Every structure is written in C-alpha cells, then in structure tokens.
Amino acid sequence: MKRLVILISGRGSNMEAIVKACAAEGWPATVAAVISNRPDAGGLAFAAGRGIATAVVDHKLFPRREDFDAELARVIDGFGADLVVLAGFMRILTPGFTARYARRMLNIHPSLLPAFTGLHTHERALEMGCKLAGATVHFVTAELDHGAILMQAAVPVLPGDDAQALAARVLTAEHRIYPQAVRWFAEDALAWDGDVVRHRDGAAQQLMLS
Image (tube, rainbow, N blue to C red; front, side, top):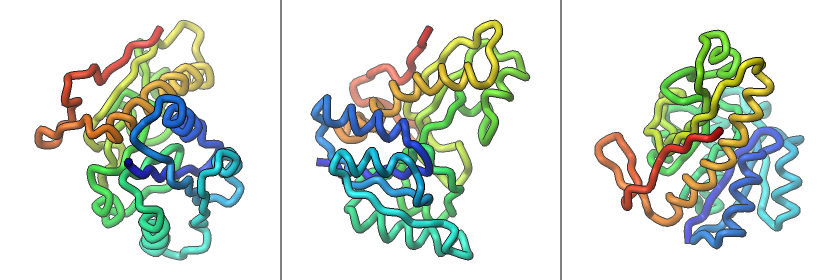
C-alpha cells in the first residue's frame, strides 16, 4: 500500500481529483496527508473533511529556501511518503529537495512540455497561435518543468478562446490524467528506460480530448 503525500498552495482541485479517484477506484494506495505552504489554502478543509491528515509549513516563516525545504521534507517523511504529489504547489524547490525525492515526486504542468515551461502558459500558447494545448504529468527534477514525462493530454485551441477559457479546458484534462498517472505509480506499473518512463504493459500515455 503506497502512501501518498500531496502538496498544495490553494484550492487543490487536482488534489481533490486524486483523493476521489483513489477512494472510488480502490487503488493500492492511501492519501496519507495533504500539506500546504499557505495556512489559508482552501484544499486543507477538503482534506480534513475526508479524514486526511493535514499540515502547514508556512514558507513565510523561513528566511532561506533551503530552511523551508528542510522542514517540508521533515514533515513529508513523518507521514512515510512513498510518492510526493505536487498539486498546485507554488514553490520552486531546491536541487537538494528534488534529489531527495528523485523518481518519487510528480508534478502536473498546464502545457504540452517541453513547450511553455514556467508561467502564463495559456497566454503564450494563444500568442503563438497554437492549435493544440494541454497538460503534462512529469517527474520532478531540479530543472523547472523538465523531468521525465509520464502522461500528456492534448486539447484543441478553439476560435475565440481567451486564456481563461483555454485554462478551464486544460484543467478538465488535468483532472483526467493526474489521477491515472498517480494510480500507475501506486500499482508499480512504471518502468524506466534511461531517463524515459513507460507503462510496463504499454498502456497509452497520451490522451486527446475534444
């Protein structure tokens, strides 16, 4: 039984999707804790209402990023995490932290990586005239938004889209692929080929949504 620890900074809609799927689908996993760097994160109430342990490591209390990461790691390890899941966790993590959880920390990014790393992905996609946008689940490394890709979903960019409309369509895709990717990890269904990760049984790692 894998123990999942989910990190959030706000409402945590991807966290909610993972918690619900884990319970509904009977994964060989349990969400051991939800941790936020913001005491007012809305997702903490959802987790507590589901009987999930919660914790806050307020980044404002730490003058150095390394000190925050050290305390965050201590709290994560206290819950016996097999997998750390970043779900709207708005902190850039130090190389030491990412190395500590190498190949057992996931993130989801609202673009089809390696395109549009960083912020303002939807605005940039629209400015470039992209015909497809999407989301990527990837393992976390020290280089921002550059870890091994586990799963991607593509959605069309429609005439008349603004950033808000496109973001909503991409978020729906995120709620589809992030729980699936976490479930695969929990089921030990992943295999590494160098720096590339694949599903052991060849399950599709891409999704096209209309």
